[in-house]
Length: 121
Image (tube, rainbow, N blue to C red):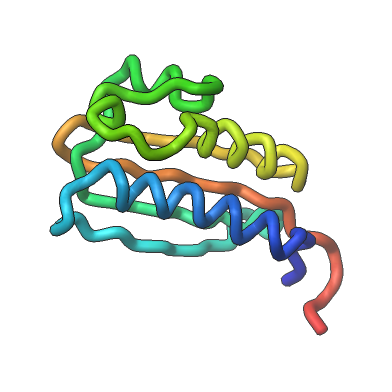
């Protein structure tokens, strides 16, 4: 399986999502990263936490520039661009990103990247 990504930008994509999972949750929150091959044409990276979760308003505005959800307004670090940049990087790699979340139940961010034809070296 070959997924053609720029290593620097791939680290940035995953790092942005992990940073949010850590920054916007309590210290006892567990964060898991899981990968799966989907229908032989995509690799999906799931970043799953059991943290605070997000309400519907935050979910719909998550990828808007400078948007900071209610929980993140309490803190001043960050520019409000992390998820916007992440989405742009994922799209640049020919992929897609989706987020599911429920208040009090946690969040799952799934990054889907295309698999190229051919075998890995």
